[in-house]
Image 1 (cartoon, rainbow, N blue to C red):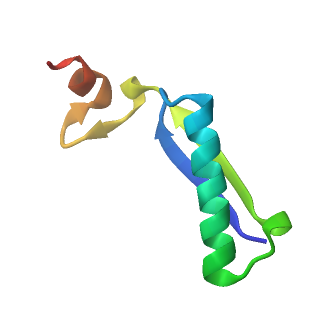
Image 2: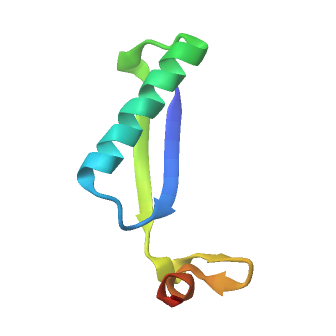
Length: 65
């Protein structure tokens, strides 16, 4: 049973997240042959204030024009 966790910043729509979850499920099924019913995928979202890359908080990056 493949277990896939996606970590990402908050802000995507429900439709965007559903499309991504379905695409990941299909990719796992096609690449390793796991039965679709056995594939588990979930999203862990976090605020932009809780992520830093290159020394800059994501919230600061979003605020920069």
